[in-house]
Length: 436
Ligand SMILES: NC(=O)c1ccc[n+]([C@@H]2O[C@H](COP(=O)([O-])OP(=O)(O)OC[C@H]3O[C@@H](n4cnc5c(N)ncnc54)[C@H](O)[C@@H]3O)[C@@H](O)[C@H]2O)c1
Image (cartoon, rainbow, N blue to C red; front, side):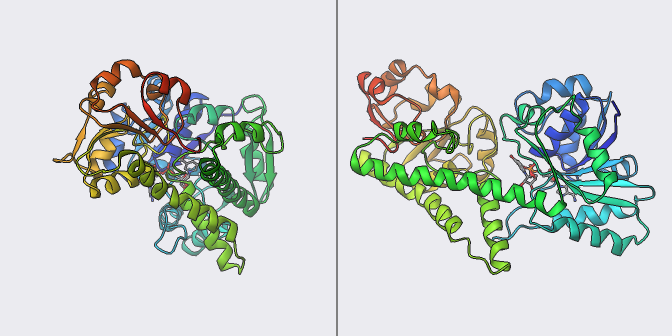
């Protein structure tokens, strides 16, 4: 099997997973990031993010066939295929900020001495590849290159599995040469999964349409959850009954405190904006977004209804990351809930297995906020536990022991991780989401 010289631009969640997994397959990989601190850590063999399994692979491949650099010439001059994995965050008007994509498109122009394939992996609005192509040609009219789209669908926390066993691989290409290279990289032997080979703009659109649909699905079940609370029905049973219908499916029908993370919020907004620019009204997505924003109010209301007075209460906050198995707190519901509780006068003890360091940067410890070293420490002298992320550590917690440390045995569960009957039998006042 042909092995390539692969360059990966951006050493974030997507870039690092892509680079390290390609190195595991034996490709020669150079990963570039302009963040010198990140590269310094990586050069010491340390992974600057928490993504299970990445460090183990890196131990095998580092300095054998994967290298890290903060120097553009080292990646661009030495790669045949360049995967762009830089961030595409949200602009104030909701559109995607493409300045990082533009910056690396310009930066690589002077290194296009022989043919290179440039592959967008970042989530970008439809037609971004056309802009990359135009930019490169403006700076280097004689450059020999193709721009392809290979949107990334990995989920933080299971990035390696999603890389090696994806549900599908989407390849948007504009030439036979680009198609051949991508099909050699994503060959049937190593990637025996469905492949959608299409034009570039269709590939770009598949990513935004997928993420927005998933967000919509979660908002739908959250809307149903609110109704379940009103009429005394268990949303998990409703979701199971719906999800067993193969046309609906069980995934992403978990009621909770809403979707967050670095993708759904910005991607839904960017898709709405793209539609607006094309005189289409994606009102269904606007509603999904609104429902999601209201999850925070709904949860705070629930805390008030349960505790009566929030001021002066000591609360154990379980979970800071936007989902389990990651240290990513970008747009995490927990990070929106914490200031609301502090404004209401609560004292908080925060605990998360992986996301505390990131959270300390934006919510430093102070007289009202403490960080606990363990789940036990978090509940000592507390009036209630608030579950904001569904980490396994919380699911497996020894509740009878923890109860002894608490002032009042109350659990307000924003993620429905326990069986209400069992927890209530232990003597807790248990307040789940979307259940009687
Ligand atoms: N995080 C996810 O779960 C996920 C999943 C699928 C797709 N995506 C998409 O992938 C892209 C990257 O996401 P991420 O979460 O990995 O972002 P990230 O913020 O974790 O990492 C992006 C990295 O790019 C670097 N960078 C920015 N401009 C650069 C430049 N000009 N040259 C070199 N490096 C540069 C930054 O320093 C940063 O380290 C986004 O478009 C995102 O929407 C993310």
